[in-house]
Amino acid sequence: MTDSHQKSEIDPLDVLLAQPAVIADRGFSSRLGQKLYKPPVKREHVFMGMGAAWLLLASVFGSPRALLQSLESVARVLTSWISSVLPLPAEQTANQLTSSLSLQLTQEAGSVGQLISQSGMIGIYALGFLVLCAMFLLIRDQL
Amino acid sequence: MQDEASLIERALTQRDNAAFSSLVELHQGKIRAFLVRLSKSYDLADDLAQETFISAYRRLSTFAGKGSFQGWLFRIAYNCFMQHIRSSKRRTEVTDEFSAQHEILEDNYENLSSQQIDLENAMQQLNEQENASITLCHGYGHSHQEAADILQLPLGTVKSSILRGKEKLREILTLKNEMEQAS
Image (tube, helix red, strand yellow):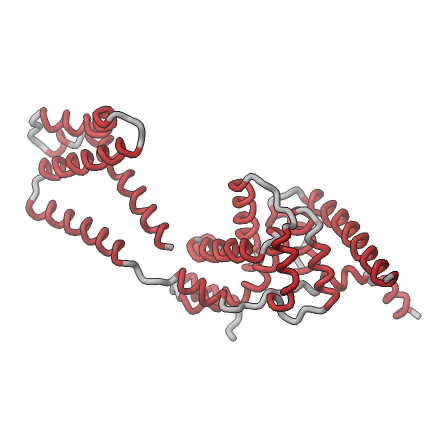
């Protein structure tokens, strides 16, 4: 009696909903694995290799000033690229990014502490941010 | 097969890809079925499921272990879906493409009964909130509070979505049965 009473209270919809359909794998996991764990591609290796080589050369042969000059040249390349993409005059963009660095270099500062002052650091941070953005886009593109 | 906790532990501490792959195999069926119900498209659901697992892989260290791993995955999946909705700026609708795809439902799902096929068809008539709330609570055994956390909705909204959704399902399934009996 009690059993039949309990059975009548069971909602058939609840029973049906409690057996959710599950999609068969059909190669999904292996496709995802290929996408997720694929080794870094050639472009990524070249990119990282160039960065490492630049750092090595700069630290072995370069002075702090040479390092800043090198950063300035990278900034020029980046700003010319940005100005070709964005509707901004190249000079304006370049000035925004490199003026602080150039200013420092023309002042013939004698020590590293003087060279890397607040205004110089802004330029370096801007460059670092741009490089990080480029790396992020490259890596995301590979996934 | 190893238990889920040890797989998570290995994937988390040793960055063991094989362990993470096992976790994917364990959960992909539910996550993809959940996303099919929401997106109403098998292809889009597969893309979103891939996005979900890639995101989970990257953010594995943020899984605190407070709730279930499945709940954490559902939350990421739902966020991926909502992100897609926002970026595409349109609500999902049952498309002709999806209706046509339903002809191959049995190929996509594991051991699907005729009643489950009817249910899957009926679920497509619900909105995202109703669909997600019912699937999480009735299908995968999450509490109302857990579903509210996963969907980032107030508890009351989840409860009312379930009530409203079930009413709609009853109407749709009853109507279908009546039409079948009449014919």
